[in-house]
Amino acid sequence: MVDWELASRKNDHLDIVLDPQRALNTIRTGFEQLHFEHCALPELHLDDIDLRTTLLGKPLSAPLLISSMTGGPERAQAINRHLAEAAEKLGLALAVGSQRIALEASGSDNGLTGQLRQLAPSIPILANIGAAQLVAGFGLKEARRAVDMIQADALIIHLNPLQEAVQSGGDRDWRGVLNAIENLASALEVPLVVKEVGAGLSGHVCRQLVEAGVAVLDIAGAGGTSWAAVEAERSHNDKDRRVAQAFINWGIPTAQAIVQARAACPDTPLIASGGIRTGVDAAKAIRLGADLVGQAAAVLPSATHSSEAVIEHFEVLIQQLRVACFCTGSPDLQRLQQAALLSHTREGK
View: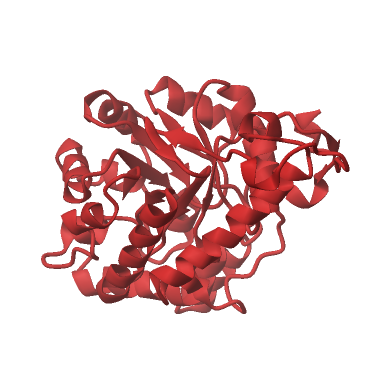
């Protein structure tokens, strides 16, 4: 694919995700079925609640990962700068969007250079390439380049088979992906993270990935952006559109995916993303077994505006999470993971 086609596709993705009337789905995360038991006597000072944690050996001020989705080079550069500045200011982790354009297209780095690390010298930064590329020409060399170009602490391999299957010109051949991930995990100098992009990781797949050497999992469940809906919006003919539309509500709801992943891989660091809209959602995800919570689409409008807008967005989310801890009598994240629930998913019983 020529450079401008790939950049145009990424711009289309960004436009659709930013439009609240497009990429709609009716599947829910499952968090709406969960309710914390309210503690009317927390015996805590709200400001003393400890939200600190770590990722990849680096400290975080809150259990949050900024997961970015980026469009064409010009927009991507501004978005990545705003996200990096906000992440450094707040002490949050940052995962960049796909680096395929930066690796393939001459002069199109999307702002993914050493400058990103200069903007965010102290936080964990995660590089990102697609799993399909691992069986279509990318290997250890490209993985190292992706890590080196932003001085990343780890490399994300994103799994998006549904999106590729319904996308015009998408990658159809996924044979050998698990073996490629295993080979990369054993050779790459930094830890490997594997994430879905919105359809969820099952417990079975989580076990396969951990056995292959993957260090961190991001379940990225259903209930947020539907990439089938995005591709349906992008379709240039009715046939492709009808194929994609059948899968708009496909996937494992985020709450169920968290429970499955934690049961299958009890000792593996787990990131929950997919429809995390508030700090209350984040608290529920942590209660179900997540170590960190990732957010992407919800912060995109702020990211296109300024780093200050991103900071304000996450300050609200962090305060919501703090209040959720306060009103469950949880002085820290460890106690939040034990907070009483009035109802929960079948898998969590």
